[in-house]
Image (cartoon, rainbow, N blue to C red):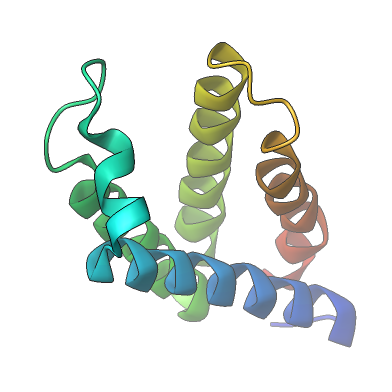
Length: 110
């Protein structure tokens, strides 16, 4: 199932990051909770994004559904990159870019 230590640890790092951000979005501290309340974003966006991230993290941890977790994590990272690029937040794109880069070795853990 796992062919080495590096792909499996990359997979677990990506799953931990996704689960951590999902918990952060569910807890919704004041700064995070007010961020998507601006006009272009619908209300409740943080809750739905958090649930998608939590589902992707769970898919990554379970061996039969890892391919779905990698696809969901890639979609989350790509949407994050597009939103941040459109808003002109170029330095904030680095974490999403690193998430996508970590999916390459994580894909070898299939």
